Image (cartoon, rainbow, N blue to C red; front, side, top):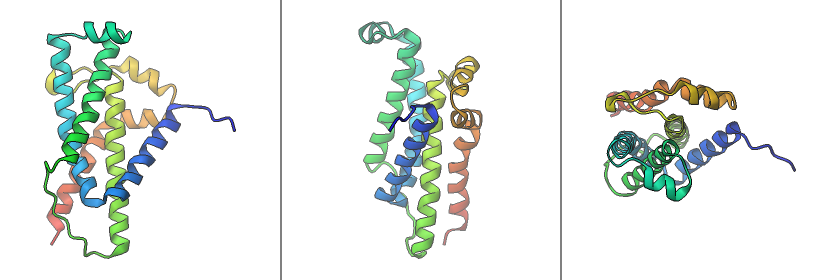
Length: 182
C-alpha cells in the first residue's frame, strides 16, 4: 500500500488521536485539557517570545542544525506541548460536571469536547508552526509561512484561517454550559 504523506493526513490522524484520547480520559479530563491548552498557549508563547528576545536561539539552533527562526518555532511548540501535559496531568484545574445525563448525552458531549480539544490543539500548533505570536506579546502574523502551509493542505488552511474561531469556541462552549448546568 502506497500512502502519500501530507499535511491533511497528519492533521486528520492527530485530530483523531486527540478525539480517541478524549474517550479514554473522559469528558471531565478533556475539559481540563482544554483549560490547560489556553494557559499553555499564553505561557509557551510568552516564554518562547522572551527566550527569542533575550537569549536568542543561537546555541540550540547551532546544536540541532536549525536556523534561529526554526529553533524558535520548535521551542515554542515543544513548550506548548509540555505545558499542556503538565497542566493536564497535575490537578491544576478542578472541573465539576454531572455524569447523570445518560449514556447518549455523555457520549455526545464527550465527542463535542473531544472535537473542540482537537481543533484547539491542532490549530494552535499550526499557528505556532507558521511562526506566529499572539499580539499580547508584540506578536506577528506570518502570512508568507501560512500561505506556504496552505498551498499544501486545505485542512491546515481552514484551521489557520479560522484560528480565532477554534480559539474562542471551546471557551464560549464552557461559558454556555456553565450558564445552563444545574
